[in-house]
Length: 176
Image (cartoon, rainbow, N blue to C red; front, top):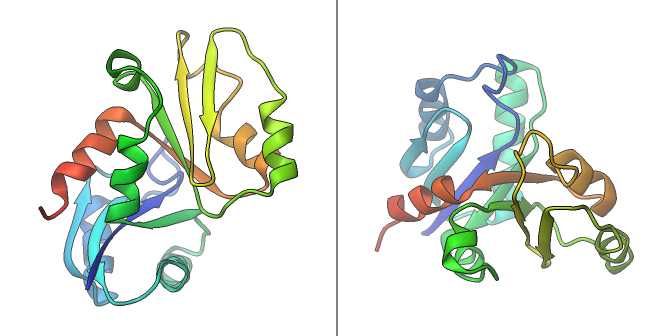
């Protein structure tokens, strides 16, 4: 069995798409996943399964749609890939601890990567790979132009962002 992390986008944010942590854990167990954990209420799941990422994403998406009648973008990634993304952050330790990681559901097309990389915003830095956009800014996250919606629109892929603290906590939940 492999350990996976599933990141749900846009639940329990601003009072929208309410999905309590206890219900999230219940869903993980009903889906047959093993050693399931939920970190905070915003859709950070750790679990074990024999299935592949694509099948897991679809299975979770269908279960959420059936229960709540809304769609949620989901990124499912192996624990190994998650750790690699975290450890490959190009920033210094000080910047890394203040950065965001936008995990991409699929690899973006080269032409879309080129479009995104053509933008420049004052006080915002990013580094794009096939799996993640590493983001650092000296301004408030609420004021940045390189937000999750912008990234998805330019790359034409689903994505979800997490801060350093959440990424580090999810890694701490993973089996050794």
